[in-house]
Image 1 (tube, rainbow, N blue to C red):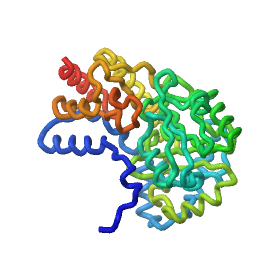
Image 2 (image 1 turned 90 degrees about the horizontal axis):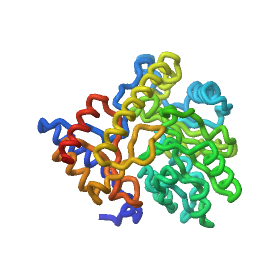
Image 3 (image 1 turned 30 degrees about the vertical axis):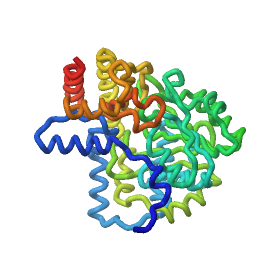
Length: 385
């Protein structure tokens, strides 16, 4: 066999996928499993979006689009920022991508040379560090705990800065913690990046899913910030594989060239369908779903705390609870497997999100119904007692 590229040995697996596979095996055997492991909304894609996709298929709108995406969709995203956030974004800065991962690939390809560092949080979304490695960069995880809201604050970024730091990558709301960066923290990160000649990349794929606080965008801080977003989470279009990138004006043309070469264009039918994601009927439905997620959070958070899980920071966004389980075990990987096999509850071990105190944490996703969450909590109670 030909030799494998060295990077393969450094790309870590996403352990939750093996847990999901095992959960499916148990279900095929007749076991009932409460799924709190996967970060995918249980709600179906909104009907107006499905109908728009069906119309596109029926009308034969299935051919390649420009690499940047359909002009009407880019205009719709621009109007979304204007109408919802009061921020003017030129459609020329917007690229429609195959999921948010496609957007991040474009940004990293444009910014990261071999050996350059990208600073990010530990814990954080696992694919980020792997994508940095894919482009021969160096992921620079910064340990973050509840005192920093599990976020890369300006003080932490300044303290960990290296001469070869090319970019800061932050997420708000964040996975796995569900926490937000404040307006002041975002402004501080933007100022630090400008001062030191690095890029600020802000992952906003859970934008819209915020609770007890105003929904904002980093684009309000200036045109030199790279912002990644997605139709997957708030808009409920995970399987449609559609995201977008808002780039600084000077990068738009080069990113277009990269898109032509990396993936040619995002899925055409998905783009036509996504036009309906911004309609009034869809917006009302999505807000109802956001309220349902908040109800689930408000049930699950105190219930887990009563069971002995330590969740010191109340998440204000996304649909995750990052729980410290050190009162129960120092091996959350083993606990996750035991919960699945013995209690029929699937959760994600902390090892998927980094190294910092990973064995003390598990992530619960409240992406299932309130009835299912109640059943899962009762199973946890029986298991732990």
